[in-house]
Image (cartoon, rainbow, N blue to C red; front, side, top):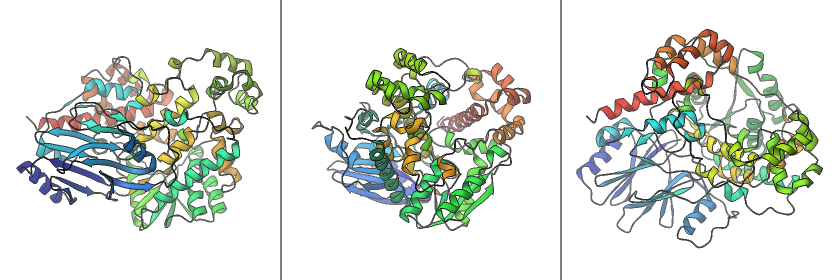
Length: 580
C-alpha cells in the first residue's frame, strides 16, 4: 500500500514550493488538488483520488450501492456520516475551501491508512508516513511523549491510538477533524453503532451466515481487483482458507501464487491442512520454509522508522522473504486472512454466555449451545450463570502486556473511545470490539509493505460491520470458536479445516530465534533508552533476558515488542536532535 502527502497553504511560500520539489526528488508523483494544495503519492500501490462533493478521497474507495445506514440524523456532520457509510476502502478524505485550502480531514473506519496532521507556520500537512526528507525540511518542534509511550507499551489497544509524540495529531479511524486543530476529532463511526442496532426478529443462523458470506465475498472481490497480478496466503487455518475459497468461488483476482510457510517443528508444519485446501479448491500451493535468522540492530531500527513502533514488522526475515517471492512470481500484492480470529470471535468462552444472559435472561438456559459452551470451558452451567450475574464492565477490560518486563505504571489507562461508547455492551462483544481496534495495527507499515501491497479483507469495513451486528452467541454457533464462519463457508472448505480445533504454533521457532539473539537483545534493552527512562524495569529485564528464563517462562512476544519500541525511541530521538 502506498503513501500520500498533502500540503496546503494560504499562499505559495518558499517552504511550500521547496517541499513540493523535495517530494519530486524523493520519487513521489506530485499533482495539484487546488492552487494552494498539492498531493504527492508513492509506494507499491500509489493512492488514487476520488472526488465526492467537497471531499477528495485519497486511496482505494469502493461504493456500496445499498448500504445499511445506522441512525445518522440531520446533524452538522450527517453528510460525512453518510459518506463513511456508503463508501468503504483504504482511504482518507480532505475537504477544500473555496480558496483551495484544506479545511478538514476524515479517516475511513477500518483505519487502513494512517492519517497524521499538523500545522506549522503557514502550512498544513496531512500524511501517512514520516520520511526523513520531510522532517529535515520542516524541523518540527516536537518531543517524545514518554508517558504515552509507556501506556502504549503496556496496553496493546493504545498502539494504534494517539501518537507517542507531542505535536502531530493522528486522526482516529472513522473520525472527522476540522482545521485549525483547536478541537478534538469528532467520531463519525463506531463499532457500538452496529452492536446496538435493533435486532432483526428473523435473524436465524442461515440468515446470519448469508450476511457474513456476502460481506466477506464483497471485501475479497473488491480488494482482489486492485492489483493486476497477486498472491494469496494459504496458511492451513480457517481464516486464510475462507479468503482463498472466496477468491476461487468468485473467480476474483489474477492469483499467480498460493503461498504458505512451514516450520521445522510438528506444531508449525501445516502442510497437511494446506494440501487438503488445495485439493478442495483445485489450486497448487507453494510451501516454503519459514524464514528465520537472529535479530540484528539494523533490523530493529528498520522496523520502527515511521509514526509508531513497528509492531506489524517484527518478523523482519519472513517479511523480506515473502515480499521477494511475491515479486519473483510477477505479482505486486498478497492477500491474507489476518484479522479473522478477532472479528469472527475466536474465543467461545463463558463471556459468550454472559452476553446471552444479559440479552434474554433465564431463557438463555434453553439455548441449544449452552451444553457445548460449558463443556468447552470445563465449567458447569450454574457456574456460567453465576459468572453472568456477577459481570460488571470493569472486569471486561482486555489484558495488558505482561508487567514483568515493564517499569513504573503509566497510571490509569483510559478506555479506548470505541470501548467507552459501548459501556453497556456484554463482555464477548466488548472483546470483539477490542479485536477490531487491535486489527488496525495489521495495516501498519512493515518491510513487506515497502515492497508489495498487503490486502487484509477480513479487516475491511463490510466484514467488520456484518460481524458486529451479529450477536456473539450466534458468532460462536454450535458453541465453537468462529462457529458461524465455519458454517457460512463449510461448502467451500475441506472438512479437515472446517472441523479443525488446533492452530499452528510458531512459539518454539520464535523462542529459538530470541535465544540465538540474546547477545544483541540484552544490551539493546538493558542499556537502551527505555531502561534509562524507567519505562523498562532493568532488573526484571536482566532476569527475563537469560537462556534459563526464556526456556522456562517465555515472554518472547513481550521482549520483541519492547525491542521494537526501543528502536522507535532511538530513531525519533535522532530525528528530533537535528532540530538543535
